[in-house]
Length: 490
Image 1 (tube, helix red, strand yellow):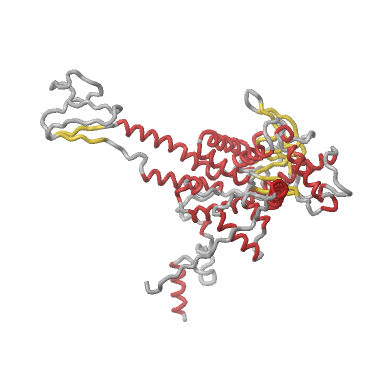
Image 2: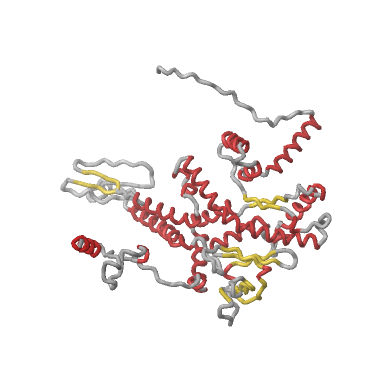
């Protein structure tokens, strides 16, 4: 028994994992720990800091991050494309009033009134204080600024319009400090926003302090990773260095290719005499022994030379950019695209097959859901405010004691038309029959609305019957089932 205990102690000592009950308590149990906390000189140890994200990204660093992201969007086509593709999927919505069930209280007429009000107030003149952007365009700009700058403010004004406030225009008032103000936001003890400090832009550059506004009148649209974070952080922050590397290396690769192309042709000889110098222009003395032996013009199309015995000619070429460089840049670009969850097949359609593209698209759709939810909340906030103003102005008359809070409406994100309409339609009908799906969701996913479709089809059918006595059929055409006999002996 004693010998067995000695062997066990020897094994535990060898592997630096001896339990405290079997060895001296002064020996630290190195193996009983998280590997991520022990660098073992294999990787850089992260700095230990338990502060808030707003302290890590202080005002100076926030400006640098914003300037970096804006510069890439301004000058790098791939970065600009990433933002546009993100907006196509995340920041495109359609409004639908859903009060049809209130038939006994004028629900159908109510839907028409609400839709008309939202349409009028969504125009550039009715929505934007500057009168430049209608609601759909403003929404794309707001989301783009959120992605690039971290957040974007939407300030509602007394006349029912809104004013956009870019993130760098929200900062602490001059002479203020302490825990009450964080990057232009005054918070309470729980971290809830109470006021925002807004700054204006000088025509010659720079900012000047304008005023503070109540948090009830400003919606800060941002991206947050931590629960106590006051200001948002750009989604591109983890991928900015990768995008910058790709942007700069494109220029380096192009410069290297140009230098390589400066060397065009070389002549090899085994004869004792020199081949003479190669002329770029016609020379009357070309047949002289001291004159140019060969006259080559690269801009004159195909050319030929009559070589002497023992001479050879080769084209000097350089494989630039190299395949290794291209593969590396592709990998870096893949990493950068992940900052917005964009599949690489969106950038390079030939990267995968149809099923790979379809699978990547489905995963991307799932990644877009929480991003759309932020914008849906903003649209709900704006819509409720507009309907309240419409009631106060007498533009919207609610029946009975109905209130704005009881109204129903919906902002539906843009869908994607069917990839294979025949197969997907049949599959969806089977899913509806089995209770696994519903027609409303299917129509929205296909960038449509089932109620609008039914109303539109009813109008077309009625028109055909009343005007031309035509009886149109919307029943699907059933294709005959073809059974092919297979000879088992073959």
